[in-house]
Picture (tube, rainbow, N blue to C red):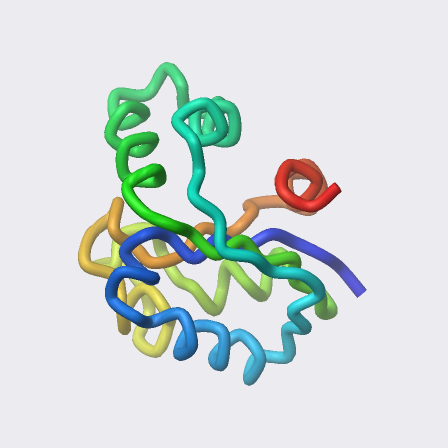
Length: 132
């Protein structure tokens, strides 16, 4: 079994999609080990997304991720990292495969409903950021 992190972003909670997204993840075999609603501070968002600090979208990303509560999830299943990336789809909903969470619910590259760790190593690092 593998573990990873997922974050339901402010747009997901604002649009009341949390239940639909979690239900889909459960249908895909994910177990929700821990989860909680959290309002990220600017400092937390800057630290968490620090890998993107030099990118032009960094400020907008931090502003968006602190614009409302998020739901952080510690998830588990076989091949959790790759399966979660498959289920959520491309960052750009226009490029996401039919039936993926982002194709169904995302409004834009930024307002794309969910964050998922991109590797097993990052899954461990990101999970420990929120769940000690």
